[in-house]
Length: 205
Image (cartoon, rainbow, N blue to C red):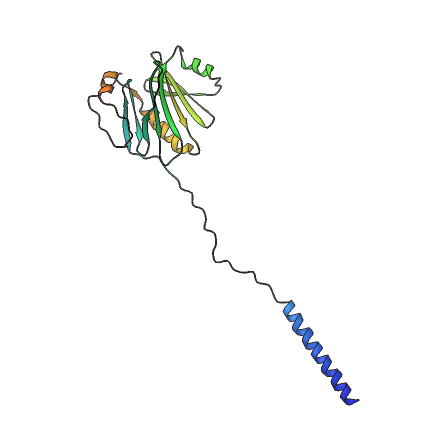
């Protein structure tokens, strides 16, 4: 009888120990794994317009300044009514500025805006003239008329509005008329991006 009691007590002890071990394991906290390779924050590259300016003089009789890092290209045209068509682009920044000079029968920039169904525009001073500027379709269009010639400066922002807006302001602010004869003697088509020094310019006041 005594042996049976010892056996029963031993079995109870084994069961109690097993339950205690199982309970202690089930109550252990699960620690999530630590990831050493954390994703690095994405850095946003900001680009500003260079303060170093270059001159562009067009043989049709105008000139302006534009920043380094932007390159000029003369676009091809067959129409006799077009005097000049220039494109300015940057190899690093998406977007562009095109400047076009062409004959027009319009009497004023207001007529041009009416033909384009432009409702909201602002007045801008360019050279000694009053022009108009308006935004639409991710573009800024500046237009003015001088002696039967319509000038349009179209700035295509793409996704870099601040950059191209700054470049546009520099071009519009430095735009001047020069004698075509003087301009034809010193014209630059900036495919290399180098600085050019012009001499013998005569400005029409």
